[in-house]
Length: 183
Length: 296
Image (cartoon, rainbow over all chains, first blue to last red; front, side, top):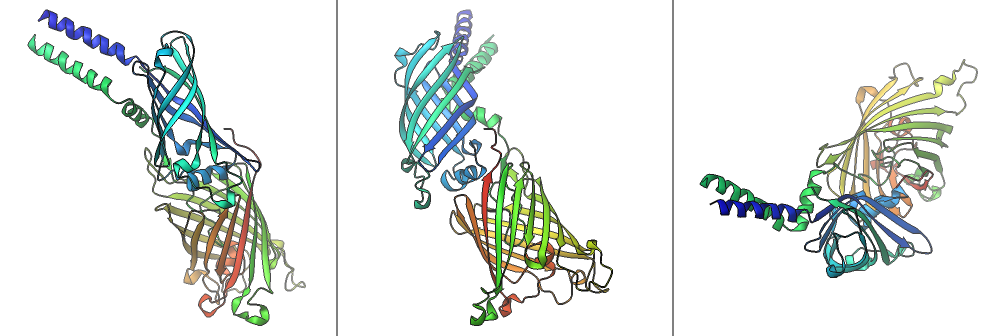
């Protein structure tokens, strides 16, 4: 009996220890850029939630579409109303895995090149997406930076001919998150 | 002892279950915790329904330049080119001071009138962590008719040409495409045409919009004047039109029986009978300029 209890205790502790492999942020930054000769459009979201499970090499993001801020109020309204349709599709998510976990040591300070592959869902469309970036581990905290591009057409985001020269077909997305161990 | 280990086992299982959970599920649970109210946005496309105000404000730091036109009655026939020979207009500048407060000034050719208004958003329709079924705004307008007095020999006061109006705007966005608005209104005249006329005129407006596509909506607006609080010989203002959005512009195209473009003129001094062809074509062009950039 004593042995059983000891076993249970040890496994409980190990599971507790295991759950500390999860890192989280509530104020990650995701911004996007559309560059054309007519107009540059930039939107920034500073309320992105994301988690990394370093033991499994999993990474997930949840982005509220309504929380993107723009230089012009009308851009924000059109972004929500006409393009991303945020009432219908309030959230964009990414669910992926590090494909090179063997070359990242999440427990040791340092800078690592990372590749992530997974499903990006927005505007109700799920697409396979790969992104490369940099993981920096320092004092038990993780920061992740990445830049990648997507095609609007892949996500069924229409670009009416009237504004086609003001909105780029490919959008650059920048991610910048500082993770802390999840308590 | 047996019970203790059972409890421990249960605790253990709950931990195990938690750890095995999908990371996405875990993230969802976390985001659920700090959910914010979800405010209704873009209840209407622009700050005016047709003749009158909508609950929309221009954003903070944004200047809205509006040019409105009304032509003559279409039943004037070919001789008047169905009203196009006659035109009256209003030029206006609106500015958003904060997210909930905007001000504006304008000048109408009709009766050479100047106007200024302030509009404050008191309640915002929201769902989620805070639920509010409606958006409520208050608008106060002051109008000054600079047209020369009819009888210059009489002792005239400039205050006789001042008019005030107060409105409550109660709106709800029922769905992506349908929004409705109710507008109880009081207009005060310092000087009225005859002794029998009331100085305070009461009316209730109703209006709404139906979105026909992402960039076009059909709007309707009607003001009912309370029988004892109106001028005799006036009719109720009715307007029907389209909002057409093209990038930085909103183009409004409509038909109405009203001539003026400020509260007292379109609500209380409309004389046309819409259903007898006293209809004016009108349009408004709104162009916004970002004066002060918000901090991102």
